[in-house]
Length: 329
Image 1 (cartoon, one colour):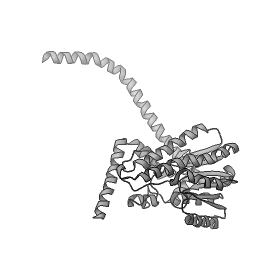
Image 2 (cartoon, helix red, strand yellow):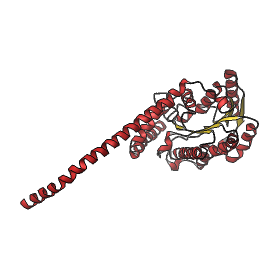
Image 3 (tube, one colour):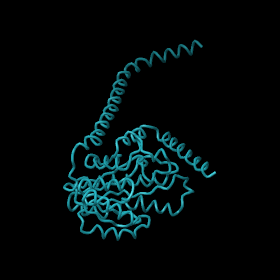
């Protein structure tokens, strides 16, 4: 026992000088790390204030900066309709693209009457794939397209992958994925020739999280975010603004499956409130949630271990499945 104690004392006496020498270095490293974390946090807060609040103090001439016409896909309900109204309130003419003709006509008339701008409609069910784009192209001809909002999207009620139909799988690919590069391909070449314009791709906070029960939806939104970031690098000096919007929950028809996601709250935006905030960020940030409470939510998600976030959402969606079973019975 004495031998062990003596050996420990000898090891400690030899180790302590090295530790004392390293102690100062480790303290400096710790201070530098703490400083970098604090600086990063301060930058995020400052940038958040600039993007979400400062940006709203100034009147924007969207027509002069980008062009006369805005094209909005998925524009007869929810975020798309509110984006169209917000852009029209800034004096832009609006081309509405969606699948239901009666809704298109109604929204076009509503916008024209309220804001005194020109409107046009292009009927297109994006789930049908490539065949719908010819009609859209005809309506784009002769228009000075200043802004494209790639908003159209679909979300089936959260469910296990094997419960999703083949039709829904292909619809996800056509609506959430293919529509974004296809519509971008129509307008980007002309914007590049003019050296101005803006493309806004609506993704989701879900792009950061492989959500169970919403596995295809979040995967498609990851595509939208990745595609947008790549374009931003390719055309960074072109004069064309390419923006990625990654919102959290917005109270629309897509979120009706769960009351807590659908009813307006601090972290659940109304479509009009969201669009007003999101349009204000154009030109201030290429990559944003578009709504400041959602930016706080995203910061919390990214600061947490992913397994914990995924586990939390898993519990939420499992509870939803139990609710459905109870209602059926």
